[in-house]
Length: 185
Image 1 (cartoon, rainbow, N blue to C red):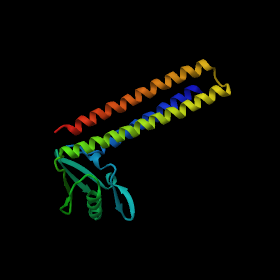
Image 2: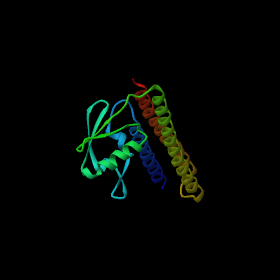
Image 3: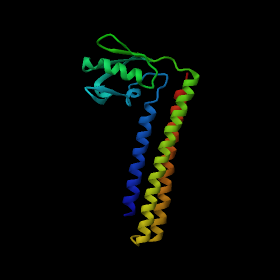
Image 4: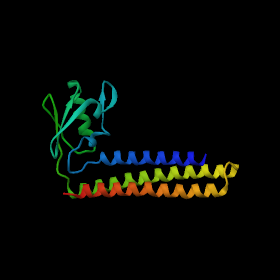
């Protein structure tokens, strides 16, 4: 029972790190990448659809992305969704592809993105800590119900703390990498 609780907590913490990495990937840096468009939804025949499902992406230059819609009728909706997004881009549509040229980031905008990355990292840390708290509550319940000895529960709590620290360290490492990427000119 104790091992199951620890395993479940570690799996959830791994998922929290994956979500944090996806959030970091959606933050724009100086270079163009398809991951920036992961959180953009397009109104496609009345339902919000992820842009990644409606088009393919090509990066011919460092700050240019060509978006080729699978359905040409979705071009107008894609263009509108890109303009309304927080990316700060102005797409141009030639009928076949939508060209997005990313403007150079100002120092102020870079700092805003660093703040956003730090906020997303803190959200991930909070998520990991909440998972730890729930697992600790479960371990306390196991101890109280007499399903396991106090020594086993104490060992499991130490292991839970080590797992939590390891996952928070991973989040901090990913944040540092994203920060350096954002501040790179």
